[in-house]
Amino acid sequence: MLRLIAAVALGLLAGCTPPATRPPADATPVFTLAPSALPGGLAEQQRLSFEHGDRRETVDAMVQVDAEAVRLVIHAQGQVALRLDWDGRQLAQTRQPWLPASLDGGRVLSDLQLVFWPVEALRTQLPPGWTLEDAGARRTLRDAGGTVAWVEREDADTRVLHQERLRYRLRIDSVALAP
Image (cartoon, rainbow, N blue to C red; front, side, top):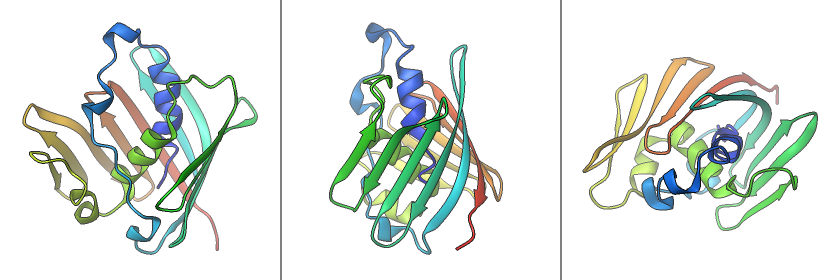
């Protein structure tokens, strides 16, 4: 769920975009739903593959979501690169100094929620004029200017997030962890 998605994606990907060409920070909504808004929770090992322009990165993550918290650990270069803990009120993050400053835990959490949380819950946090449509294997986030992002569900274990406005793509391949 919390699929490391944006965490590494934005850090690695935003780090290679010149500041003058970066989209504004408010180009997409930032979701901050409670962990309990994800029915049934989540416990997965994930392989995250990011694409931004010509740059490609793959990292591994562990994600656990229960009614109390979202916990995400991203492994890169044989180390814990980023650790996030979200209790629905406060986001705590521990990061390696070599991660780009542009890798924002809030954006990582938001992308995770866009991919995995129920559409009905996400809609409660959309700004006026924004829509989130769910057509089975695809959910699409739009504003008055058009499509901002979309998520494709390739199968039960694979999701692909296309952040059109933020100009990156994240593929999440998941394996459920035994309780």
